[in-house]
Image (cartoon, rainbow, N blue to C red):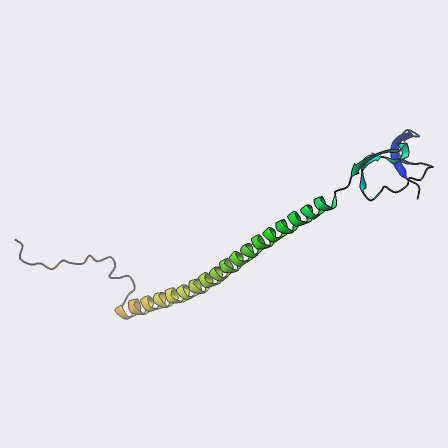
Length: 135
């Protein structure tokens, strides 16, 4: 494998990306090092020491702890979501029950008005207060 880089060049009046390959193949970096940045065609590679086994173990432990916290948070959110969903279903059932009771009450009012004669005929008449001895 030949390392390569792409350069922006002006060709025939247009900008184009041109692959620039380096003749020298680079040897792989040692396992204790990792490549950070650089341009391969110029041989500009920056190496950074890899983590020590103790550092890797600490990072893995921190990642596991973070993952456990995230799992617990997700569990809490899902439990609360289920509770809210159950409450919403209960409210929907209660709303339907109240709508049925309201419709039954309206029906009963209509029956009572029909039985009393003309609907709304007694609404406009004021009720007379019983006359009694006043002190």
